Amino acid sequence: MGGTTRVPDGPHTLALLRGGARTAVVTAVLDLYLRGAVRAGRPGTMRTSGPVTGAPPPALVKAVHASLYRPAGLRQLLDRRAVREALGALRAELVGAGLLRRFPPGRTRAGRRALRDLRARHPLPASPDGLPAGDRVLLVALHGDRALTLSAPRFTREAGLTGRGGTTERELRASWDRGGGGGGFTCGTV
Image (cartoon, rainbow, N blue to C red; front, side, top):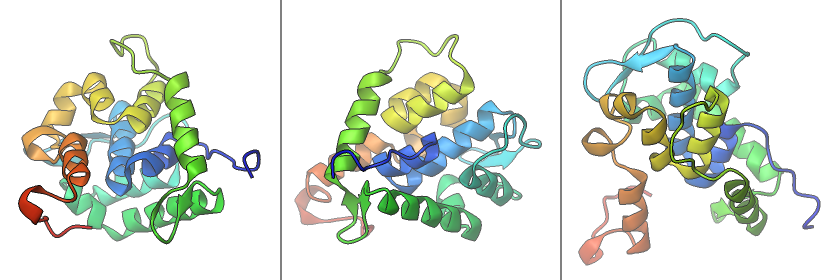
């Protein structure tokens, strides 16, 4: 079974595999920002700033762009129907490729191995200078918040993707590692 697993194309799918729905949507937002189609709105929100240029965008990127017809924060964006449907299609692709389990939800051994190999082949650089937009999006998909703040620090902060405007992956990961939170209490999200 080791040789039959196909790693899906596209950084948005890899982001879903690595960090879940939130990470995939953040990757799509960065993709749109680098194409000039999204910008930060009021503190903690994003909004469209024009059409999507360049190569035809993947379904999740289209859904995110269409869902920002009205400015929204990341939580609101995750709740919009078109985004949920696009995420469901990506999730089904990962399950079909044998990289994600439906029940219990989580990565398979092949999924963990694929991410480990991709991270080794695409290490996080000291600076994003000279990197094409597609490479920046791939780095965010594979490395998360560190790559995000390296690629677009001001936009990331103003749009509420990290820092006080949004919960960072580091905060989420720390709470998961402790079993959901300190003192046995959880935030109620699963």
